Length: 388
Ligand code: GTR
Image (cartoon, rainbow, N blue to C red; front, side):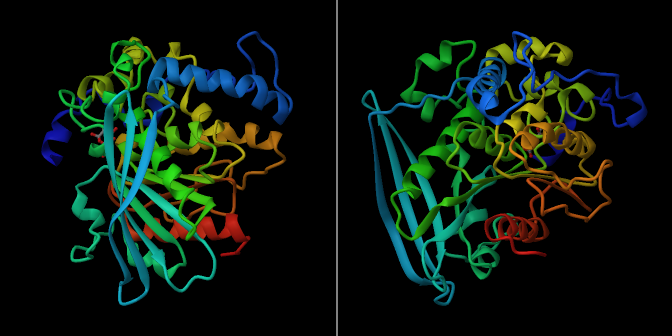
């Protein structure tokens, strides 16, 4: 997989800061009719829906909201997992629409030491299922469930293939079965949209579980999963926090910088991730009516944490930091002051006590225990004002 992945990176990829072209970002606070947005009220009433619509139309596709029925069954449960520290629930979520259904397998650990409902981290898992092993025979840094339980958090995950197999030939064999009209639409939902849709169906389940604090659910993802976590939080305001790890192009990084991965490459290698309209922007980023700072802005006033790894220039760490910076003006409409510095922080220096949070970890493109420990600090500080 890794070898293959690097073979798909063109020799023309730019990693040189001095070769980043000059660019002008679309103004997040100016409506399409040229009106300047000066209040949270006007943002929410007119500009926010417009921006959300532009992302759906040009990139991620529509987000279907209706379905006929949803059922939840606990298929396995252990009140004494992790040596009594956690309550394991394996939940089968089945969503029905027009005589078709999709099954989402959720793994969930809830801390036993907690009085009252527990806040939750939900990972949109784009790695093999073993990374979220319910039996804990396999322990992975990618989803270090014990660390989260120790920190007082419930931890949940579902695998993206349940919603849309990550494959250009078979991605439609999942949530898209419920919405076949999406497939023929140029602005229709595709794989990343389906994964985000799945996160919302998991949220539907969380709302029914009295052991969980549904006002404190963080949606998290790594890389392609991190693109989906941003899109999920933009659409579904029930997510209290959004964390996007190494999400790069069409995730948290600015497209117009044309640094590392570009729109044409992502659309060529992963044609099933985004809608058909997005292909118009191949080698044509400047024509996009949005850039990724506007996706982050859609999540305001809820906190967003975007992270990178130093060796992962493909995901443009600097472009991710700048994207957060350009979202600041939307948070300011809510009276929220970001603590991000003017220039990209040093490696391993998380800026956490801020509605727009950032770190660039030393090392490779991955999700590690270091990252998760920062996510816990981020949630602690936003939920309980706990200082680090
Ligand atoms: C790469 C892709 C990136 C990122 C990554 C991943 O091949 O170019 O956009 O999503 O995969 O998901 O690990």
